[in-house]
Length: 206
Ligand code: GTP
Ligand code: MG
Image 1 (cartoon, rainbow, N blue to C red):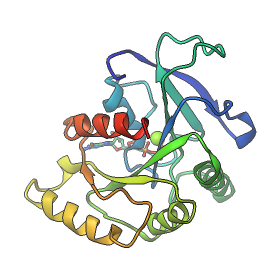
Image 2 (cartoon, rainbow, N blue to C red; image 1 turned 180 degrees about the vertical axis):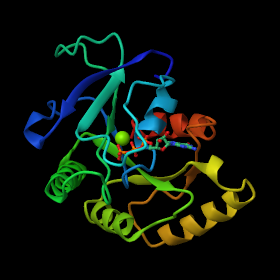
Image 3 (spheres, rainbow, N blue to C red; image 1 turned 180 degrees about the horizontal axis):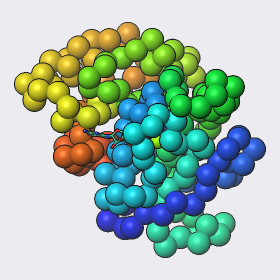
Image 4 (cartoon, helix red, strand yellow; image 1 turned 90 degrees about the vertical axis):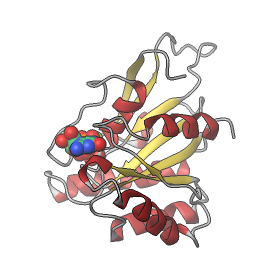
């Protein structure tokens, strides 16, 4: 799955531009700037594939990535797609714009039948915030499987990582759709990326 070069196939600015429901999809959600696009690049081993930036609000559409070599014809569909999403929360963009992105992301996560799992990214330095809790409420209510991934672990002390994983797991205890394992990653150092690949490969088979 991850041995091939991946390609960008489509940017979706609103739900009506979504591709027909087909291959299993895995989506990446989280506050602006948490490192969604960077983690996708680390997963597929291509630094510049998903566009990243230090300015929150970089990703502005649902961006579809698939392993290369598929025509997209009805009988030649890719085995899966990774979907990079706009962040929620603070962004360097007008509030109306941010509200529209948030609605797009929330509607997609609630209603997409071929979405197999949402990866909910949490910045290791900040932990779970109120708007992350709101997203988890929505996913629990929609019975949409999600797994929490801590990002940017290179920015905190190594010894603090196991404790942070434990604290985070504790907060997920009574959440029915939360996968009971929290992954810790650094896209910068490529830490935890192998484990995430394995988790994704398993998630698309269910
Ligand atoms: P939006 O699309 O704006 O919502 O942001 P995003 O969640 O896609 O974040 P993005 O991947 O663009 O990364 C935001 C910033 O964090 C960039 O400056 C990245 O270089 C940095 N960053 C991402 N992952 C890591 C990491 O693992 N370690 C460190 N140190 N920096 C990271
Ligand atoms: Mg992004």
